[in-house]
Length: 464
Ligand code: FAD
Ligand code: NAI
Image 1 (cartoon, rainbow, N blue to C red):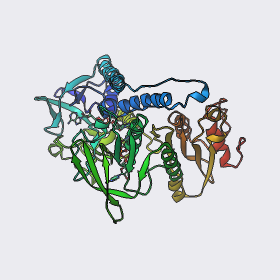
Image 2 (image 1 turned 180 degrees about the vertical axis):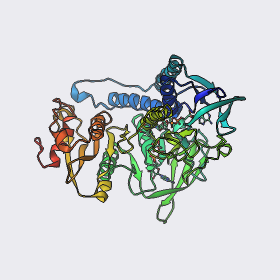
Image 3 (image 1 turned 45 degrees about the vertical axis):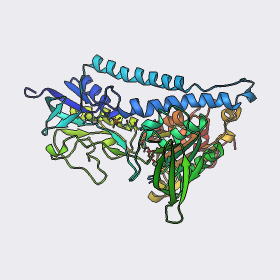
Image 4 (image 1 turned 180 degrees about the horizontal axis):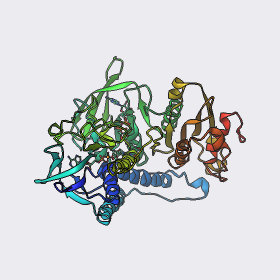
């Protein structure tokens, strides 16, 4: 340790980096974390998970109040008025509280916060804000940023990325979203609920790539009923800005006649790419794979001894909880313990209404690996969902035909994001569908649909 300033230096204070730093400090290692932003928490807390969920929650409340949907429950609201400034202010307050909370946790755990952009100047040394620091272990947790669409300039006024779409000062009349992925649907939902007309242009023939096929189709039907316009199998060839408006030129992905769409706001949401530029990786000898990611082994060690990497900058799902779990695991590995992340059981949630959640293999993926059994149960037959007048969606359990082991669970429901945790836990414990079917679930809850879907794997649900 004599020559080193720190046992562990983490670069980036997103969910991966700040968690790694805290765990390393908890394990008795002298730890610092370098962060280029003014505040801690990375993409997730500053311009990702947290502000988007704040707007999703607030816009849902507004829509419920405004649309008269509560009247059938005996709640008459004379008039609901949007105060967008207040909505943004409450969002910023939540972000401030949470990013400040990480600063508090750093102090509590004695993690030193190095403010500034970190650049490698050697395998074990980094320059931050003009100061050179040496560390025995360096964890790269620099996250990701928006993938640009060639030829389309994000001007942050009319043509925006997700950060711009979290801060529109006015509700656009017509919002065109490029990309029917998670960001497109979540932020599209926010502005639709607040009054915008929303058109989503997607290159592929279906929305939400990567999710279970049946879930994708059902989700599209639900969103179409909500009033989204989808242009699937369509590519954007140009976006021209004319004053406060934009003209989007599109054509079929497979080629064909072009058409134009007018909009007063365009959100580019076609994915994210790892942040490695400006890191000075050439000084370390560390290379990138074809996708620009840093390859790691199961311990999150890179090819260069002493350099580790986690989160969005390494292969795998770009999700905050995956980054956090990798943060804990890498710190434990550095400290000489055994840190493991089971990448086969990482839940993912789309926070629309209804929510869409999944864990494990999709039905399509499972089929390619062997014989399977599938059980499904609709919320139209779940007593709590019926009582709440909120019956969109279903639960699907995919199990191995021979062993009955659960391979995947997929849910569309208002509460899917919360419900998926029980499926992840069951899978982590190697549960069979029978294990779930014989677990007593409280009544009346949406979670009973998970039990019934598990019972349906053997053809024996009760309520349908
Ligand atoms: P990041 O959170 O990107 O953090 C990396 C940090 O490193 C940044 O703060 C950056 O400033 C810093 N940094 C980069 N380079 C350097 C350097 N050289 N020196 C110093 N600092 C540096 N995921 C979910 O699981 N749930 C959600 O609901 C969700 N919602 C999202 C909504 C939006 C709009 C977006 C954009 C993303 C969302 N995500 C969500 C994804 C989630 O934000 C990321 O998966 C997660 O933040 C990745 O964590 P990370 O620690 O790898 O990187
Ligand atoms: P995404 O990968 O989810 O979706 C991008 C979509 O754009 C895809 O459907 C893709 O086919 C489409 N696309 C790509 N190029 C296109 C083109 N030229 N024209 C039209 N469509 C095109 O990416 P997104 O929505 O930008 O989100 C990035 C990542 O952020 C997600 O993958 C996820 O990891 C993370 N995220 C997670 C959230 C959550 O967990 N709830 C919320 C928001 C983001």
